[in-house]
Image (cartoon, rainbow, N blue to C red; front, top):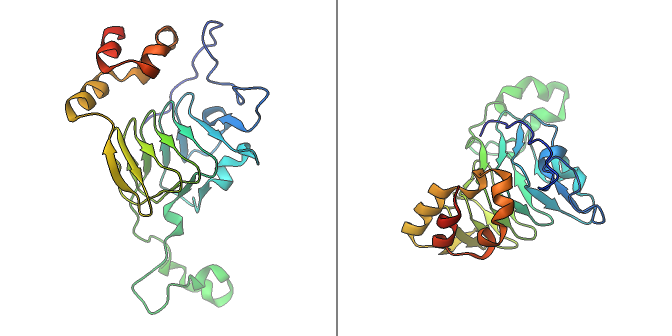
Length: 220
């Protein structure tokens, strides 16, 4: 997902570029204006909620991010307290007698750094739009989570999650689909998250509580 230019400020719509959308609740931060790493992308209005230090998201919630794989988070995602993304840098060798990463200890062991560089990975971790992450969920490297998915609290996501799927557990398993396949296809075609912000503002109630038919009727 290529980075998008900032949305111009409109007094009739919320500002997607402000760090704290709720000024009296510093525990809530919008990720897009917070992130500085070129290896992390976040869409408009995706937020993280943490009473401890939400602004430390890049270092406390994205772990072992030594590159070059990216973490891509779509628009309108809700990340509950303690969500963690484990990146490919956490990998250890498993083809020998020991999994210990000797070369990172320095000294003469560092001469063997080739043993831990270039370990196989699963690629970028990609989160779709409108995904809800419950309290203290964990996402393993290279996972792809579809649009509209829900990740139950405490889940450890090790495999891809389908669009509008609900998963839970350790390892996370599909609990159910939020819509039947036909309606999922309609929702993906409507892609309300790409509507102009003014149009989203006009139809917030339909987006939050309306049927697929009502959403289709509201499409620009």
